[in-house]
Every structure is written in C-alpha cells, then in structure tokens.
Length: 120
Image 1: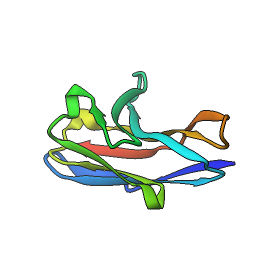
Image 2: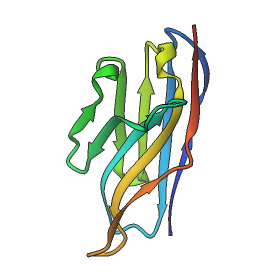
Image 3: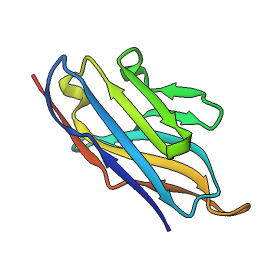
Image 4: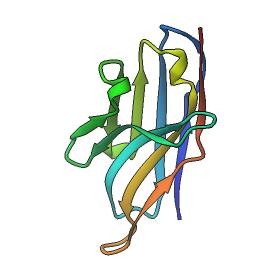
C-alpha cells in the first residue's frame, strides 16, 4: 500500500504565498519522481511541477519564476512553494509520484488533493 498525503492548501489573496507539502508512505522500494498537478473547475488536470530522483525539475510555463518545487528524500516528502499567486492559480492541487514498490513493480500514485483558492 502506498499513500500520498497533501497538506497546506487554503485561501490567500492575489500576490500572496502558500506552501504545499506531500508525504509519500507505505511500501516504497524507490521513488522515481514526485510532482504536483492541478485541476480547476471545468478544466483538465495539468502539470504544475515535477522533480526526479536526480534533482531535475520541470515547471509549467504559467508558474515559472513564481513556484518552486523541492524534495526531501530522507522524508519522502515533496514541497511546492507558491509565490505571487494569481486568481487563475485557483484549483485543487494533487501530489503525484512514480515509484517502485519492489525491484520490478512500479506505478503512478496520487494524493487526495488540496484546495488552493486565490482571491482577487
């Protein structure tokens, strides 16, 4: 069993900041990547930011320069620091991880989501 538990969402005014965190727990052999996606009402889920085991990061163009993803490998935790938030950042944010549960079995896992609301 693998669980991803997010925390840190909430309501913030435009221009403000929020930090999200996600802890991955359970039967973990090796984590390949961790990341954040978001889904706004009536829209498809989209990539926000990801980081792989080597430390490489990737961001959606819409958040570059404002959001920062980081990870603590010892704690199996990924963070998302969101600055200069805009109303269009309002969405449910989901944590995602590709990981191996043993030397051969891997899959993609999702958290339950945390709401981020940015008021204008």
